[in-house]
Image (cartoon, rainbow, N blue to C red; front, top):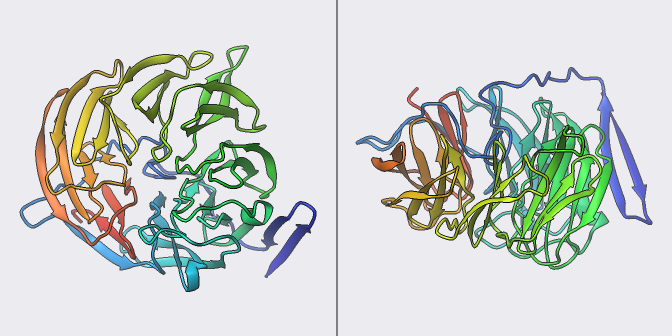
Length: 417
């Protein structure tokens, strides 16, 4: 039996709904093959696993299942379940989060909510635009309408926040597609727009706001990324970076205090990428920052590494940037470009490419995928291309040698078995 608790403070417009009761919560122990958020658990869109490549008959599809409604959010993988969000109904006010079994695609559970915020988006986008995230213990899902929900791993609701009640001027007609992340039990949300623009840290256990900070009042779709920087005594301090045209700001995860501000122009659509001690910021090309040093000094800059809509990918000491149909590879150490390759059947790219031990997968909006197989810093081989059910605007997830692709109204598993 579930007991519903509701707290409303009319003066602040604060709405928090929590569910408490008797249930056996799934233990969040974490798995090596987990892909816990947008661009993977390491935010690099990279995996060490071997994955299936296109052949004469296309690329092997293990299964394809319909989702509850449409969405352009990325899937995440937690153990043996893959989780996606969708939106549908009138004005896309019906919000869905559902779990499928990674082996056979059968549905484990589905939860439905109603949007309290502004659901309107561009026709190519969706209310289910931000990707969900997990810490291995819980799942959080954000929607363009600024509705934020937290679930147990078995689908039982933990809490719900209608952030648009607190901030009724938050929203735009394209979509609020910045994806949340969870760092040290704090859910980080970045909501940038021409109205009420802010970022906030929310306790993952209770749904209570820990801090909030103003953001530039222009639309942005970049997602936050968490990492560690050295404190004054050299101890690691957990922080989160927000990227915008006004620069990159780094904040303490627990308090929201500003740690440092880097005055470089960042992209409003691409997201920063962390790899070891290097933070990559997309702007006028690509800028690499050293997070192991106070102030995050610039390591290198390269204007040739333009990423357009997709975020950079890091694997095996290489940085991959996608400029439309052209994939560019450079050294992570110094930013030197080693090769660029035009990908066949690729025209318009929104999904971040996926790098695995088998190659770099570039996903066209239409559903076409082309794969380049790097040979160190030498020119790559082309593994071929394939066509999937489209459109594909979401970055796929990789787990246990399989690739999970989110199409408009379907979830597809690419695997040899």
